[in-house]
Amino acid sequence: APQLQRVSAPVSAGAPRIPPPSQQPRASAPPARAPPPTADLMGFGAPTPAPVPAAARALHHSSSMPAKSSAPPNESRAEKLKREYAQKAASSNRVWDDVDQRWVEAPVNNGVDKLSTASGASNSSSSIGEMSSSLKGISLSTANAAGKSASVQAAVHARVADMQESQQKAINELRAREMKKQTADAEEDLVRKRLEPKLKAWSEEHGKKKQLRALLANLHTILWEGSGWKPVSLADVLDDSKVKRVYHKASRVVHPDKTGHLDAEKRFIAKRVFDSLTQAKVDFDEGKA
Image 1 (cartoon, helix red, strand yellow):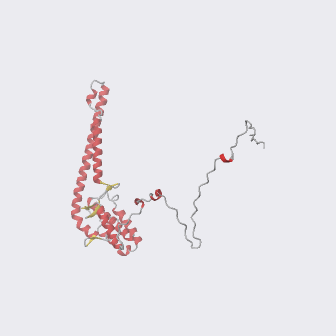
Image 2 (tube, rainbow, N blue to C red; image 1 turned 90 degrees about the vertical axis):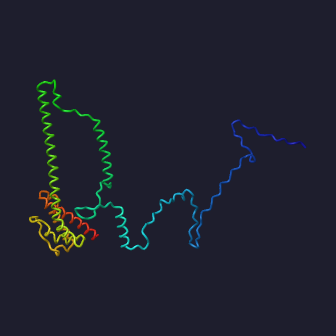
Image 3 (cartoon, rainbow, N blue to C red; image 1 turned 90 degrees about the horizontal axis):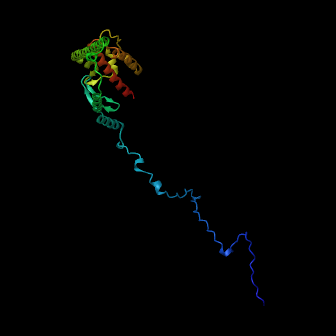
């Protein structure tokens, strides 16, 4: 029998050649997806939570946890107030005031004690002194007029005389202020020694500071004649609103701005009365808080 020969069909030059199916590359299968977490519909349970990454667990730091309170458990209000008062007393800088005969807070400037302020001021003053020593000014004296015309010499001499007169006037005023201050301090010391027992009996009782109502009711016994204060009784200051009204009237009578023209005795009484009323008003407000 005659043998058949396979004749391939002619391939055109521009047609693409398609390989047979046995030589085509096989497509890779898509990756299998993880099944979503399922909830127990019959038991109403929550789905199993996904594992938390290690990076998310590292965000929780010990510093972000709330700080534990130093207060002991089952602490009463009285114990808490006592503990807070002890902490405040330990951290505060209290000094003894010889004039008011009581403990007061040491003055500070914007949260800085006077000691640190003084040290800083000394450093700044030393730097300013060094800077001023490096600067050189022009001295004004009659020697600068040597060799000048008669009109220039006359002007220089007049300017020097005027400058010397102004300097002597400033020195005399400074000495007068210092002498006046020393005299006022000496008078105040004498007045303090004479009036201290009377003021202490008005402001204290059995070693304790009197309340604001008692001070206002007995204020007429300590003020000077002609002060303009009208006496009030204890019944007039029983109401809190009346206490505040009478306190403001008394503060206007003994305020330092109103008593600067008085003599040393009246100024000292006004100063002590003003300080005592101010401290008693602070205690009164704290008791109502």
